[in-house]
Image (cartoon, rainbow, N blue to C red; front, side, top):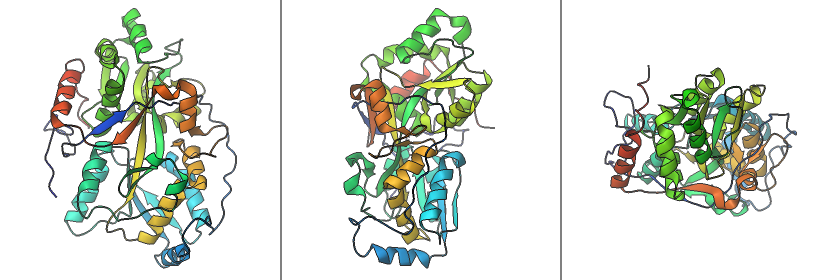
Amino acid sequence: MQSTNFRLGTHSSSRRRLSLTAVAVIAFASFAACGDDDGPDVAENKISVEEYPDYYPAEYADLLEESKDEGGQLDIYSNTSEENWAPIFRDFKKKYPWVEEVSANDLDSDEVFQKVLSEQATGGSPADLVVSNASVAWADFAAREGTLLDYESPELGEVPDFAQLLPNVYAMSTDPMTIAYNTELITEAPTGITDLADLAEADPDVFEDKVTVRDPESSFGFTVTHAFTEANTEGWDDLERLLPFTRAETSSGTQMEKILAGEYVAGFFISGGPAFPVVADSDGLVDVVYPEDGTTVLPRGIGIAAEAPHPATSKLFIDFLLSEEGQFAVAEGGLSSFREGVEGEGLHTYKEVVDEVGEENVIFVEYGPVPEEEIDTFLDRFYSFVDPAPEDG
């Protein structure tokens, strides 16, 4: 199925971006947020080797045998860092010891889909699993015929309803969008977007061009910013005060590096996934808060590629991620778990977000369509205050 191009990913013809269909995200204001970020050691994840719960179907044993015949390998196309993946891969291989090699590349959130589609169009892709929190791109990708393998996880009855984002697309984590700041350059932690705008207006010499936001030309950047303005009646008023102090960037990792280096004093709508490990390793130089005037929570989606070379092992991986063991590993890697029972010092969870800011102040993003005209209007308004991010390279 061919898609109709729209402005996300096509703001500048000289940029390498992904053209997507006219789909985006409906943000629903149910509210929940995050907490402290000390990065202490966490308790050991107890793995039941080659075992599964009694609520799994009896034929699940056959799936394990099929996986054993697949060569012990799994290949993932993702926008998730090696640090986030490390405990997940470690514990998955511990649970299923015949799986000896699990690899994941680290692509741009939109590029994940571009790469799979390009390879599928030219004779096949080595990708087993697709992972990204680019919800606009996910909506397009999942709607195409022949992109995803049909699979219903036996864990669905044990997790929140939102754990299935779209048919055959599951939530791997529920990552909050934070305000990150350099503690040496800002002595008082901002409490939200309104407060950050107040601080910038009160001290323009410190904040001018020293605040960063994610460029909404990418589906990730559009989603988290659009979600905030849709759920918060004063969202655009605050952004119009704050955006003149900001510069756009194309990745949360780059934003965190520059906040740590002091190039930026703060950044907002920065995903907790790449932010939490930086905070933990910064010796107090960088910290994050969950905006009290609305913390956007964006699920990170995962699905099995239709032509996955290792389909049985891919199904085991999906089920592991949704399980309590897998969600513990997700949280240990710096992402935010959504499963009840996952708790402990150093672990970030959806419940932590709710406890911090209140359920009424959590903006949970659901994957779904938004009219193209609304996207155009949003981008025009945003770029009247902020220049697009510079070209890569």
